[in-house]
Length: 180
Image (cartoon, rainbow, N blue to C red; front, top):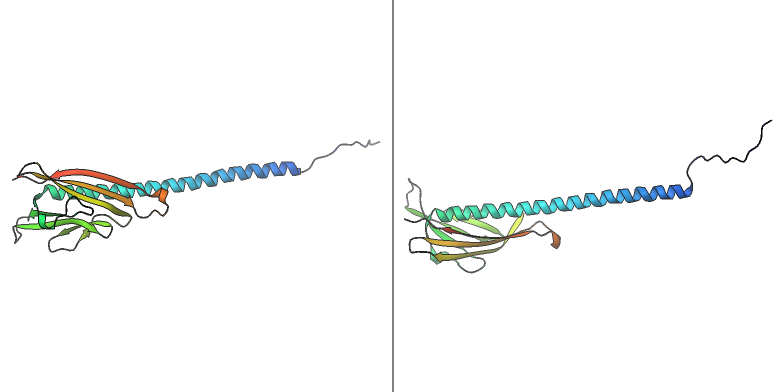
């Protein structure tokens, strides 16, 4: 004879267990989504920093290189101690050129730093992902035969839409014109 017992057989989840499970899964998914958003934001900021630093470095290297191979500053078209400044340099043309010297200018064209050689179109030294916010040239007269130019350059990211993502760098350097 079979005895009837009051055993309760549990098959499935209770409502409380299901609520706890959903809450734990929601917390884990939220943490993963927030981490992903943070990683994307850090990646964008890093890319903006890299763009700004790379453009500023290339622009400064180009200006220093051209200053060092120049023989004099062309004062009538140079703008010193002002923002935006302009620097005009006289350079000896390479052998085989019909003219003994030529001119090169550095200036802002829109929000880019541009270089213009005599009888050529301006060339942007910075790309569209950055904007030059300050360009100041100062002439230092170390001696009559060896003047130097101090360059102060500020570049910021142009692609950032949020103020907290804007990256900016200030660079200052000086270069001597070559001596004869």
